[in-house]
Amino acid sequence: MNLPRKILLACTLASTAHLGAQSQILGPTKIRYVLLLSIDGMHSLDFLNCSRGISGTNNGAPYCPNLAALATTGYNYRNATTSKPSDSFPGLMSIVSGGSAATMGVFYDVAYDRSLAPPAKTTGNGVAAGTCTPGVLNGTTTEYEEGIDLDQTKLNGGAPTGGGGINSIDPSRLPRDPSNGCKPVYPWNFVRTNTVYGVIHDAGGYTAWSDKHPAYSSVAGPGDGSNVDDYYSPEINSTVVPLPGITTVTGMSCNPIADPSQTGSWTDSFRNIQCYDTLKVNAILNQIDRKKSDGSLSVPVPNIFGMNFQAVSVGQKLIEKNVGTGGYLDAFGRPSAQLLAEIQFVDAAIGSMVAEMRNRSILSETLIVVTSKHGQSPIDPKLFTPIPGSTGANGTTPATLIAGLLPFSESPSNPDGIGPVEDDISLLWLTDPAQTASAVATIEAAGKSAGVGEIFAGNALAEMFNLPGLPPTGDPRTPDIIVQPNVGVVYTGSTKKLAEHGGFSADDTNVMMLLSNPGFSPKSFISPVQTKQVAPTILRALGLDPNALQAVRQEGTPALPGLPF
Image 1 (cartoon, rainbow, N blue to C red):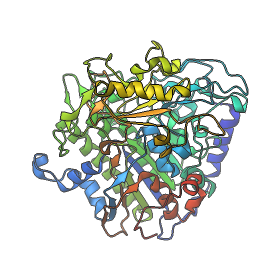
Image 2: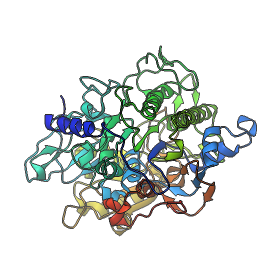
Image 3: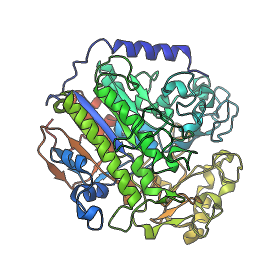
Image 4: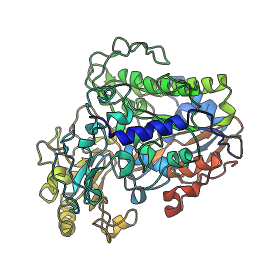
């Protein structure tokens, strides 16, 4: 199933309008381009260790020379905090919108909305189809990951032609809006606030982004999806296939499959994930060379472009049978051999981008932003505790304790559903909010058996988010209860994981933040900053008004401190 014709036409016309001539966007310090990179999972500690060296790893020598080189002309914000929750979806949208979950309305890639209705067709991951009646706010689990693809087993998401992108989205698998004639809610319209992509596109700029799901076209922000001129999104959870002509920057061929023992998903293998990331690296190199992500057409260098790397995240949390265990060796963040290889791969890939920008004489005009959507917890492997009290999937979690109080689509008692939102955090939406106090009491009584560290409900939630409920007094997306478990507790029965993200802990939220340009003198900041400050900083760098971002105005989000623009 394709996108509606009017959306495809709007995207085509908007893209064509930007192909004729390079935008005249130019910032006060002659910045014309922003390369935005998210090394998913990359802690500030990881960057300090790899750029300075740490005893016991690589003979104590630094092991990310390209990132270290960027720091010699860069501003390093060592105390940067990502979104809360620290999932990929809110993490990404915070970076490009300048807002928190309270404003942009994004809590998790799988969440719940009391005001929306189920999709017309069951998603690939099990969000059940249901009815939608205009004006009736019945509530539904919302999924914005691979389950909305036409075919999540395909690298291009099942799109009829080409690399996929937004044409991979199946509208019948999207939640529907009873307040808007039961129309499907596309990812870009699920976000309540605009993004840097919308602002830059409206200013005549050419824009691009590469990510792991077609759903992350949400970066475009509200509209018709055309704010991103070139969106490339090979599906990360597709079946692994050979990649003819693809060789990683470290010289590994991806044809045949680099690791044929793991073909269920690209994230199941330390080697295959590097091949997957290389697809997006090559897209960036094409864009630097004034081509579209697929190497076709002659287009401007995007005023904003970039990608997310998955390799480090996989290196942090994967246990690959008969291959090895990723993660860290100790609380100092010494990487395992598997994680070390992923960091070195990402570093080399970024080095190839910098070299190509230098070859194309645009490096001096480019602000390079390297950060992360989320961290990963725990760093100290001794703290890892999968589902307390169990070695399998039947242990005690907050959701299992109050399963009868949850909507069926969120309940662990639903054998066919997508299940509750639990990683190293638990987000709980109740069928009847009046049962919140009772549910909290049940979770409190379980205590250590569920690894409970801290419970947020009522006014404790209001400190960070809008109160839950329906308009005009409540926010339909805010959970009724959030449980932050003790550090190291991960609500998973998987034998393939030794870490996760999503929570509020320092390991989850303290991430790398480096801004670099050849004209900068190196500086290091210890004062707290947030990844949402990247959005207004990007606009200032390009000579655009940060206050054009709705979340910046609503939350008062400042640009990052100390920069020369």
